[in-house]
Every structure is written in C-alpha cells, then in structure tokens.
Length: 516
Image (cartoon, rainbow, N blue to C red):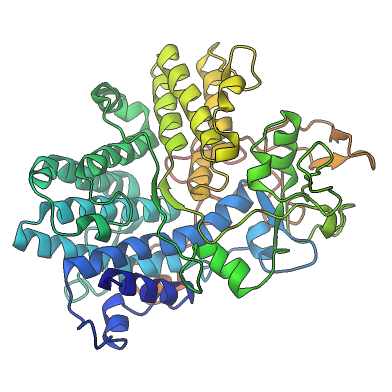
C-alpha cells in the first residue's frame, strides 16, 4: 500500500471522529508507521489536504444541503437531526467547517505551495492554489466575513482580523484562481512522479485543473453579477470550462474509509431511519414521473419490490419529528446511501447550469437553452439506470422544456432543475444558489399531503410544486431561511477581532432579501 493511502485513511478517520482541532502534522507524528518514516513532503500533504477538504463538506455539508433543500428530513421516530431541520443553530453548531479548514486543510496547502516553489513543482503548486481558493470560497459562502489576509500566520497574527467578504475575500479568491491559471503552462510542461495518485480529484491533469479553476472563477463572479458582466462574458467567450465532475471517489467499504455521511449515519449510528425522503422533492418527482426518484430514495415497505408501478415512494413533511404526520415511518422512503457515494467539489450538471444562468442573464437565450439542456441531461446521466432519459424531458414537448420567454422564466427553469441536480451531489452549493437567486421560492402553504389510501396525491391549496415549505417547528419566520453559519464559538469567544455574530436569517451581501 502506498504511503498516501495510509495518510488518507488515518486523517479521514480523525476528521470523521470530529476531532478536527488536532493538527494534521501532530496527528501523523504520533501515529508513525515504522515501515514508512514520517516526513512532511508534498506527496504526503496533498492527499491529506484533499481528504480534509471533503471531510466536513461530505458530512455536514451534504446533511445541511439535503435537509434545507428538502430532499430529506428527520425520521419521525428519532432525534438526531432535529436542530438541523428546524434551523436551531448556535455558535457551537458545525464548527468543524471553520476549525478543520484553518487548522488542517489550509495550513497543509500553504506548505505544499511553499515546497512546490522551492522545487519548482508547478503541478503541485497549481493544484494547491486552486484547492486553497476552493476552501476560502466555501468558508466565505458559509460565514461571509472570514480571516483571509492575516490567516495562516499564527506567530505574526495570533488574533487575525476578519476581512470583508465583498471587498477583500472574494476578490482575493479570484486572484488565487488567476494565479493558478497563469501558472498552468509551466505546470503542464512536466509532471511530478505519481502526481496522478496524490491528486485525489483530477489525477494530476493540469488541463482539467485549469478548466476547473475557471469554473470556480465563474461561480465567484456571479455572486456580484451586474458588477462582473464584462468579466463573465469574457470567461464565457474563452469556452474553457471543465464540463465534468470534480469529485473525491477513492472510498473503500471499510470503517472510516467510506463516504463521510455514510460512515456517520449508517456505519456509526447503524440505522437508516434518521434520514427520510422529504415530501417536497418526492412530490415533484412523482408528479413528473421522473425516474431519478429510484436512485435517490428506497421504496417503502408497502412496495412489492419488483420495480413496477406498484412500488411506492413516500416522503415525510419536512421538519423535526413531524408528529402530526399521518404517514408512519415504515410508510416513508429512506434516502439511499452507499459507502462509495462521491463527494463533489462541483458536479457536471452544476457547471452546465451555471453557464446557462450566465447566458440567460446576459440575454443569450439560445446559448442558455443549450447549456440548460446539457445540464438536465447530465443530471440524468449521473446514474446508469437513467442515462439518456433526460433527452425526452428537455424536448419541446417535454416536462422540463426550456422556457425562453423572459429572463425570469429562463432563470426559473435553470434554477429549479439545478435544485433537483444537487440531490446526492454537493447539496450545500444548492443552499447558496437558493439564497443567491430566491429559487426555489418559499411557499406560504404548509406542505403537501396525501389525500387517500390509494396514494392519489393532491397538493395543499396554494402550494406550487418545486417550492420549499416552512418546517413544522421552525425557529425562524415561515418564509425565512438559513443564510449563514454563525461565527464559531472558538473564534467569537477567544479572538478579540472576531465580528459581532449576525443572525442566522440575515442575508449576506450577495443574497436576495429575506422572505424570498
């Protein structure tokens, strides 16, 4: 077994256990394998940084995205995710995003960059730069203002200031990405030994990393679309995006070596009843006879198991322990999970939809339609059982045909299908998109309901398919939605330069107003 595999397994087990305050280097120092002397090298640090990048993203990121976007909800006989479902977050909630990034991932990437500069290993340098930008971008999307210019130098800045997201952090992320893009020609001239095994996302392919850096650049630019129209058009004109998955897939069917959410929710908790299908997405898929439902949810106990029309999919109303639900737990569908579920930095459908949005907002309806159609088809092609089925849905007479009547209709098509595509694929990004565009909208209707034992479905009066509903026991107002994570207690209590904590429902500068 190669050394990178040992490092990945050990670090990943550490992070899943929730002890992300321990530094990567310290942890490895006390778990020395005598057959592999511990040295701090690029080839040791890069796979560890790849694993730690997805450790929180693939666990709590997917949990938050799945439940807040109403793909899933809390089972009505358990309590594991109640506070997540009803938005009862505090300064101690999900601190792992912050502490893991600043204690493990970003310092390791900083070391990789420094070593790569000494050795002129520009392929390592480019990959580490892009991953650095990605991690800062994730933090800025979660917290808005974050330590950036004074981060990662504890001796000089033991109490780093929080930089303004709009004027410092996001422009800084764009600079990191451009630096990486500019260095790609040098990085492509030669390939470091075994870089394809140490890079656990794109196997050391610098052309793909250049394209992925441009994906991220577009993603950042649309945060302030009107101010960045010229730069967005220039990026589209280059037509140099990675229109493919960028994902961590190197999982094994063994303890602490599988998908993070699977490890926590299935292998550690040893239960499937915690995460159930949510009415909101289930009803949408059933209404349009969308076959992807079979890839997202398990059939209920009432199904015959033969894969025909007798198979039943049912969701619970969203919220924590919906006791008023007339649907028993055994009559609801479990969310499908597997040890080898990928953890995506960006999925193939997502970049197509991002391009479609940019073209739509720039007034190029034909290009928007082309990218939209590709996005829908990519979302279907994610699974072998539905490969090729997207064509019929985007055809002129199809249920998901593109409506180019106006920018508003185009955006509704794009963002609704993008919402669906986030199920089982970096759902946290879907939360950011919802808050950025207001799509899906939040309905004032209570929920959807089942009308009779034959499962002939009616919608609650006033409810529109494809809109979110207020959880039954939300601590927020009915049309409010989580907009941020709260500044972690580790920083707010001990860093005198930490800003005043803003309310969970307070929009960031790039998000739509409350109630939208």
